[in-house]
Image 1: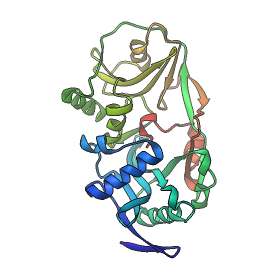
Image 2 (image 1 turned 180 degrees about the horizontal axis):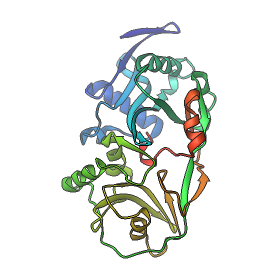
Image 3 (image 1 turned 45 degrees about the vertical axis):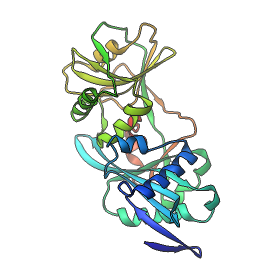
Length: 297
């Protein structure tokens, strides 16, 4: 559909997954802006209806985008729909022309009444932009422990190029994280965005408890991003089996239901601030939560 924005006509399209020329142009802008390509993810079949770019084109070229990612979230045993805005970008030749603001207004118009919470992560360059739409910055809190010691167990690193291992991960993901106070239950495609690319060597199957964990080890710190599967084992038992001999600290990528033995600290990330709509900020202020690390878009 054609729109006139500040005297110039652009084409607006939402949900471009199956529009090959537009999707490829979108991907070129993403690579130029973020050095990030969505094409491998699309090629592997993990891009579904929950990832909805909203693009403006000048001719046949995507020159601005804001993506709505639809998340199903379980909080206090209730399923909610949260929208995460991401991949907000404008071609350098088209900046400061109101295109991102137009897209934001369009998203609010088209998604009205379809979500329980809307959030985004913003870098330092745009901290003054999102408050214009009712967003406010909120603090996140992360949990750490130094009280555990490594324990033996059968742990197998999954091969994320292997179809059977990918299927195993998806089956366990469907069982959710039994230890998380706040967990994303859908889309599985977002999990696979991480686990088939940036974290493809970080996915482990604990054979004795039949759960899967996404874990990174670096300089004595083990970051457990998430755990999936049904189990009667405790979180501490699972973490102990995942530890390496030199692990000194464990950091969780999710908010645990049981915080016993964990230290809560404000989450500080380089150049990223969580924003939510002002009327929704109490959820984070009252409960010391964090957005699960594998749910960032």
